[in-house]
Length: 68
Image (cartoon, rainbow, N blue to C red; front, side):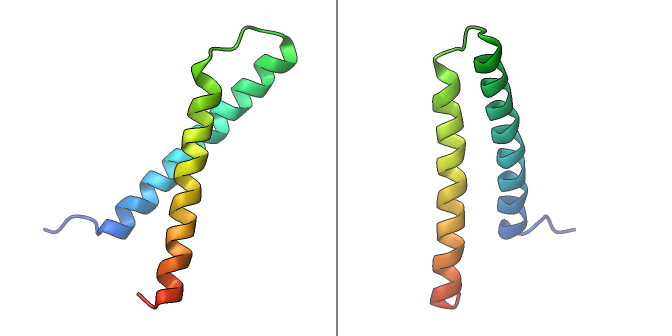
């Protein structure tokens, strides 16, 4: 029995990161709108998840261009 391939695992991680990032951004903007206190780590977490997704997207474009 073989496990999932590396691209399949990266796809699952990317989908999970996207969902978590969107949920965190939604909570952040709702808290800002309501005037609730916002933890200092929340914008950094959103930026980190966005950066991860951007790198994954750029890497997929690069690999497609290189023909891999």
